[in-house]
Length: 463
Image 1: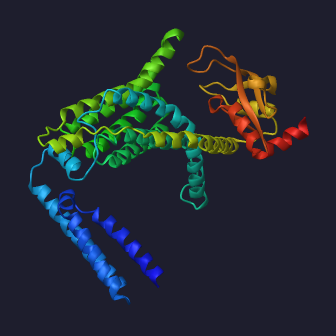
Image 2 (image 1 turned 180 degrees about the vertical axis):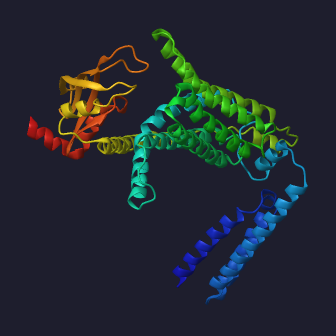
């Protein structure tokens, strides 16, 4: 019985402390300690009395606290609505009254380079996450087809959803991590970033797939995708910043400009300058948004009169403690193997959904049998089909080269015949096509590591 009472008391105390956190900041700062002391005294008296007194007292105290939280929140809402508080005052209230540990006024000198670097690497990380999230979209959309919600869907939608989800999640985590020491309630920024990129990207992607071919100019298609992302992202960020920073409305054009700067990718230069242009363009979003945020933080730096408040603002918490760094380094090994298995499995599932072929040769012929730009395919002649020799070669990873001949020159091209190459990987039921950007050799290595699709047994039988 004593054990049961102890369990009940522990659970009630934990719930009570959590409910205390729902009080407004000013109220918590003034009365939290007093409320806790009174509650613990009442619980001690109920436990000494024995019987069901502890349970009854716990329920009464929790009910009273819940009602009190609602009442105080309503009073706080009314006072904020009737009163006038500047963004700087709200920032100080969050720091001093709610105990939020922020770094001094504006981000330090290391923040801007980190923002640019991590925002830039969000793009390749999102590409790696595209396949796993595209598989989730594939399973969801297929479920909708099976239960009759829709008849069919464009396979391109899988890539759009996969990339948007991967990029929104990656960017949200990165930006939250870099802003958590400077921005009150940084978790709201995480939600705003994720929702803004996801809603804007999927909306733009659906519109882009719906427009006619006559409107599908590369620049227009890019603007249709990027402009909604910038708008949704800017508005979502403004909703978060408007309570903490003055001139927070400037984040809307900053996000739009940063997102739409990727349209410069469409500029064509000579081979020597094209790679440099790509590098500059992918850095621009982080440079523009990071510079804009740094300016807004600089403008909103609060003037501190109280020495204790100033000390709180000047506390510089490192991004990661030494212990956290060690844990992350140790965790990288199992995370790598888990992520590699998820990545390879996702790519293979999407590839099998695209088509399974009896052989790599037949897969190459079928993949290139469709014409485009007004031209039709006359012939597909396989020139070479063999194990890919890159990195020593793997028996189940082939690279196939074929000569394709068309009946005319396609629109936008200057010739009617060309050579093409594609990767094909053996799975349990045949061969599937993998794009070069999916790292087929790495996927082949992972397949052997985990014996995915029974590949090791197939290799043993065919050697």
